[in-house]
Length: 72
Image (cartoon, rainbow, N blue to C red; front, side, top):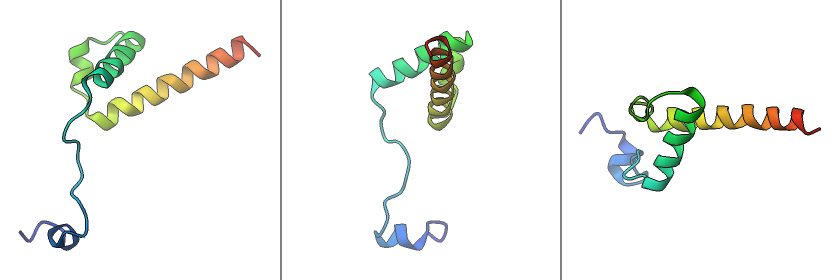
């Protein structure tokens, strides 16, 4: 196992990655991005988890700015 980092191999660190993701959270992310970008759910599901979360953050920030400007 030479490609596995020595600390992981020794048990000092746990390997990363998502084992499972709550289905309700996935539906919320997909619906949120699909609604705002007018993408199909299938297109949103092709994104990596981190990419989906990043788009959710960006859309939320845009919405927060728009709301604060509309309601000073």
